[in-house]
Every structure is written in C-alpha cells, then in structure tokens.
Image (cartoon, rainbow, N blue to C red):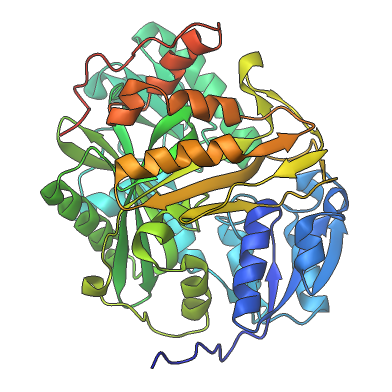
Length: 472
C-alpha cells in the first residue's frame, strides 16, 4: 500500500508569484494539506490564484518592481502571516540569491536550492566554470565575466565568429546579442550591457561561440542535497527571440546512447553542487555533441511535459524536499513513457509581429479527453492585465508515441476557444501542420526563419532544408 504523503515542517506556504504557476503551486500545496498565502499585486486582486488561495495578501501596485520584485514587501507578507516556507515559482525572484537569503534569515524554508547554489549557478560565467570542473563540456567561450568591450574583443579572437554575447545574470532571452563580425562587436556589447544592467542590475557579460543550427535541450533534475536524479530531457528549440513557443519530451533528435550521456552529465553537474530542489540544466546539441550552457535553479514553465512522460508530480516533490525529506525515487524507478508536447498560449497576435493583446476573456472553451492537460489562470470574464508576461496558459498532451501526441495536440488545439483577445493558437496549428516540425527536423533558428513567410500569409518555407544539428 502506498504510504500517505505528510509534510512535517511546512504547514503554511507563501506563494510569491502570479498567473498559472501560482495556481499550480496552490493546487499542489492544497493536495498535501498545506495552507497557502498568495502575495499579489493590486492588478491581480481578481485573479484565479487569489480565488484559490486560503489567504490573498496585496503587497503593492501593478508594476512588478513595486510588488513581485520587491523583496521587502514579499518578506513583510511572509512574516505578518507566519508562513513556514516560501515558494518563488519561476521568474520574478525565483533565481534571486538575495531573496533566498532573506527567506533563510527569517527562519523560513525557501522552496528551492540554497542561496549559495543560486548565486553559483545563476551566474552564467561561474556556472560554466563549475561545469568544466565537473567534467561537463561547455560551449567554447570567454573565461569568466567581461566588464569592458576591450576584453570582449580580445576574447573574441580565440572564440571566432559568429558569437553570442550573454548576460552573466541573464534569463528570459534578455541581455543577449548575436554578433557576426568583429566590426559589429562594440555596438552589440554596449547594447547587451545596457539591457543586462536594466533587467538584472548587473551589466557583466560573457561570450560564447554561436551555433546557428544547434538544438536547445534541457534536462529536468531533482536533488535533496545528497542525491540527484533526472526526469529525462525536453526539446526546446522552437523559439522566437530566445523565448520558447512549443516544447516536447523526449527530444526526437537523440538516440538512447546520446540521451543517457546527456542526462548523466546533468546529474553529474548537479551532484557536484549538492543540488537541492527542482532544477533544469540547459545544453546545446550540435553535430552529435552536447554542450552545457546554463542552469535554471527553479521550476521551469515547461515542467508539465516532464511530469507527463515520467508520472512524477514535480511540484509535490519540491515541497517534500523543502520539508527536509529525502528523495523518494531511485533513478531506475523513473521510466520514460510515451511522448508529451506543450504549446504556450500567449496573449499576442502572431500575425501582427506578436503585438500584446491584453483584454477581457469573453468566452472560454477548453479541450479535454485522455492525455490532455490545460494549465492556466483563465476564466470567463477575466481581465488580462497589461503589466506582465503575456503567457496565459499551457496546453499539454501525452500519448504513447510522438506521432500520436502530435495528432492529439492538433485535436486539442481545434477544441480550444478563447474569445475576446488575440492569442497564439493559430500559430501552433500552423506549426503542427509543417512537415519539418512533424518530422522533428528543426533547430533554434528554425521558427524565426519560418515566421518570415507565415506572417506574410504565405505557406512557410522550410528553413530546415539542411540540418547539421538535426536528427542524430
């Protein structure tokens, strides 16, 4: 008989986030008998998360800088309502070491890794060095952070062009520039530095070789500070401006040997920092080789597809680990089952250069049936605020094979109806009608090349005609 799951140290949890991930955390906590306190902005006071939480506490006005990113405001809510733990979700303060330290200093549990681990692995240059020390291959790049363009020019001589400028403290595709020649480097470096300073409060950059036809793969891991396991990989190469649009698991690019090597490298690196909680290690896969690029020390947006192919509730496991309990799983217990696909439904008009489309949800019809999941914060009458990320929902499907999962996703997208706003449903339907996408022949630049034709109303040409980084 399966033993009941009981938390010993977490009775009341502060959810320091919004939208669909706040809803997901609240539901996971409630199933485990944990009370939830939602810290929300004024703009989100009528949200689904506010309705579902045991207690909703307004911490500031709409701008994230005065609410979700305000450490003092979040901690005041946590102390006032005597919570045992804080779950940061993703985005906002989720990878902020200062916030994790504040939670720990207040005698509360941070649902995630230690502040030290966040600082080490959240700094992209330090994470590269950590990977190299652990024997994990990295993309050829600069040695450490770069403060000045002169240092970047020197480093670029060894790396070669094209190259990519990336923010040391970066995330979400910001603080990144692709540079094709030495003459373009100074201006691109200055622009990336300004963006990084504005977005992250840290203008340090580093350089990496740019691989234009590489695939972006991620490995989901869980650790308890002593032991680390993986939940296989996700394929995340369908991106626009380095923001993921559609993901699938497992990757159609890997054979069993490559999959095993990739996942073991991820475990090896996470084990080297005694990782605690859920985390994701990101790799580029090019011409049969994989290279570590960075680690996300939090739950990912696309975690549901990993849940679907393994049967593991990652949010539940995060809470158990934060509670001080050891991993319940051995690696051999985690079997890869079938295939899963996720489509991000964003409040953007893909035919109008992805113009944001805030507004009111006038009517809502959701897909259903076996193997279909819809993670969202939507309800009829909900007013989408214009202040935050445009993602409304994630449509996730699972089936016994990739081909069946593709068919199920087409059916589910056909059933979905969100009235009152523009959104990305039609984009996903077009992608799932594309021969290269259906065959798994795509890379990180595929979507942007494909979009230049689709947005003009043409049948999208195939940017995957040559695939050095394609199927292995």
